Length: 563
View (cartoon, rainbow, N blue to C red):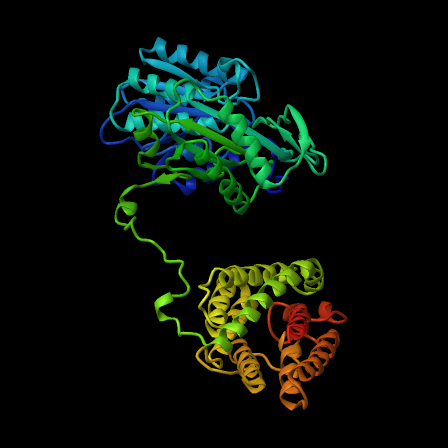
């Protein structure tokens, strides 16, 4: 919901005044919109526009290499012909004007009237209408313009900046439109300033397929799928509507409609990009973000522009608008041939492992797989107890860390000994798990590896006890916590102490130490956290055990079964 406004009727004018003040070094306000301060060399004026509520479209796209001006109507409302005329007249540099907008009845009428007014004054004026929304009509020229506005505006802005004449700018704009397709989905409707309810609602667990950007719902509702399945739907549907002679290179936009987080858009692109490549396309300068929005609508859209030798230079050309900037120069200074090495173990540097070490290495491999299985089984529970005073991600972090360690260990050379496996597993855990816990686990596994000799002909129980103590000491040193701070140390330190003090066989000692760890972990429910993210919410933590201590006790118990 749009929460900040004075008089809802003045929302459009008020926000535009703030926008122009912010970018007064490059923009000027005129009745009905904004224009870019003119370039030193006159060029064709590309005037974009429509209703407010779509930022960065339309005013945010005004600047060198992009639009010369933007006409800004009220929320989701076509600007008046007078305002279109005003902006175009002010932006005209004597090279002619192109008016461009999405295909909506009000925009067609008002921009059309303005074009006649301009032509009557001797200003050569053309119109390019965007029709990229494949869900809105089977006939191409009857479709709405949605996120494809961006590709058409960008192409004409780049063509004008390159000094092309009016005929060429118009032709290239129409060509871009003919080679652009978009499909969008909505997860939630948008709310007008001052309104209490959204323009439409999407039922829980559903999505509207084929949304518009003026508060229109989708043409049909479907169950909301995973990102992977949504990506398949978008890619399959858009590619099915490809233009004739599409070629093999495409510009791609994954667009957010207003409240879909950028991280979600990145995740969707992670799904979409491989599918497009598998379909035989090379992606050129993709864009992921909010480019054509609809106030606070929850939703996403996929736009594909099929490039050719004329359109690719326009798509990749530099631009410097208030809300969009593209510059090739900084990227040209980068060594694009640099490769990040993923190798965690150099085979040539491996110590030749003894038969006893190789036998122990098998146990390490088995244990890593079992720990990963355990963390997957307990992910929900660990997340639940973490949510009382944390952010509920402990289970996910432990899964990520243990799975990364298992994958790295499984991929290690067969001749790798237990110390080498612990090092590679620790590095992978720290890299993938994230957070303080991930770093502590990773670094401490590497520290424990220092107490194991891969060339040793035999291993005594004392070797394992020393490795455990080193693991615990590393946790203390790196984490800065102590016993009683309500951390994983409240399970690990009692375990290490009990293991060192126990008599009898290693398996018996381990079992006795595990009991001490489990008991101490459960008793953390009576403690107030002194370290970590749970400390500010100490009172909420009371009555609930520490998730790090619980997961540590679980893993120690599991490892004992391997003994």
